[in-house]
Length: 347
Image 1: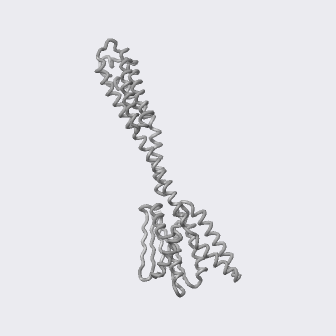
Image 2: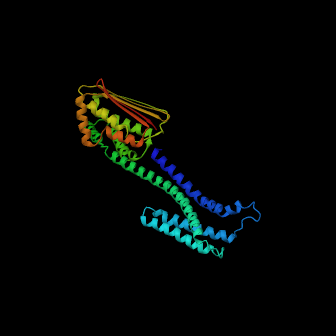
Image 3: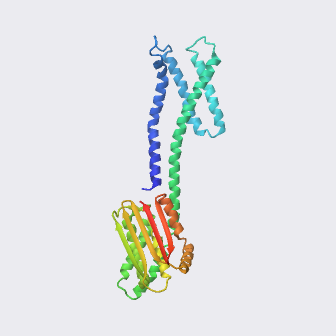
């Protein structure tokens, strides 16, 4: 399971938790607002002097302005006209409350004093609900951002995979054709491996992850095809040590390195050139090494070919950065006429 998917799950869980507890936050808030005066004066003789109807009236006006802002104004707060509407709503709510409150305070002449006091009260509730709105919005935006990032990463991954050109399969067709003309008994097996290569490339290769067993099998089939095609020119030592073949890995990450090795070697003169390929997996630690003979003139021809087909080490590096960010190391060395690739992954 990759980091982007885990990030989405984490954001989704956080947002869903907030959505679940939000109604209880509202209930708790209004219960405290309503009961606070009674709790505050509970130890005084006679208790709180204001009536239940008076406190209910006050609560209703606080709830009205809070939810008008919460549901209709704050979602559009980026538009300047809604800032004016929010201010107007608070002022009008305060005026209407003053007139409603007069039923409980007949003869009161301190209108403006009460007006500004209640205006500050309603502004305080506006701040509280804006904070609640902002927290919820931030969780929702983080979830949307994680989903967008995952979609972007997936689109980029698909574009990179689409650059993988199955030209080695077409080269192998020529080999199979030549073997068929000679009525070679190994031709059916080569056709089967070629078919498996196509199937893997266009089916499993399009998945986000595949089992190590399938990736290794694909490499083995590819190596067999190349050994048949290059005959005596190459000698491959392919070793595999897996303590858990069901571990998952991004598909088609290794094939460019192996293909690169055969390309370099195929351009060399002589026979029996050695290619060393090894894969080791211990728990979640994956290591891959590929060593092949190397000469500068071969590099120039291979690099030109890869540029033309859109394939190259840069493609692999980009895929590694997308799939295994901060969980891989890739070292490529050209020394003593050897081209060495060492890749380590934390699966």
